Image 1 (cartoon, rainbow, N blue to C red):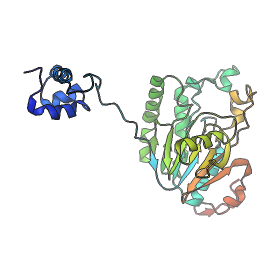
Image 2 (image 1 turned 60 degrees about the horizontal axis):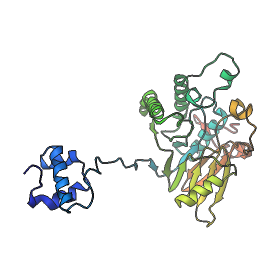
Image 3 (image 1 turned 60 degrees about the vertical axis):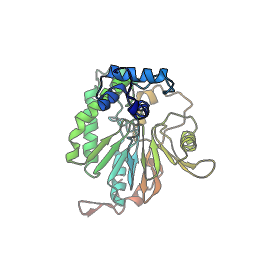
Length: 316
């Protein structure tokens, strides 16, 4: 009978009905989806199914494909290209060379993305007649990535709030554009663009969370929530602390942009938020080390760097 499951297959069908959609059931039992509905309704009416048929209509996506890395890495964040700090990025590359680190993690806000963002560029606001478009952003990002790939052979880019502007459709479209514009970097090195706002490296969670006014507070709060070490971008603060129980490291990653070029920071910057601190971090042999731009003795750290076989005594 079409509307009733064969008695010898009831147990099997009941188990399948809890996890399969009607289309998957139809494929397995070689019946039409409408017949699968009839079987479920009949079993429900006879109290053999304890839930109403029709609740499970498809297999939902499980979000578990975030990037997980092992080993060493240079970690930078909040470049906001084209307003990035080329000097600081040069230091990051040089430190990578010094320690032989070939992986770079960009912890969100790689591009300023002003063209579809909340903050217009300074040039546009000052009526200079310059409009920095989405295409310009992607081309500028490509130039920066090309320079970084001259040393790094693996670059991971996670999502920040600048990449997240607009609704979800616009956001997905922008990520597809980044992949399309930069897909050929596999010929120079491996580029991974993640739709997640976080990734893991060497047992640490690197992420781009929300803002807090107290330096280090969001990293500590997130570390206590996730019960694991956190390296947090977005705040543009630079700090190193521990959770209250002393179990986990909490890092504010700093930033790699130029505040003096950001209209929203310098012209409209009259908030009680703390000052930005430029810098970057490395994970090396399972330990973290910070390099704030204005508080690092670069002549000491970079004195052994060699470029093209020639010793560079002081790259500053």
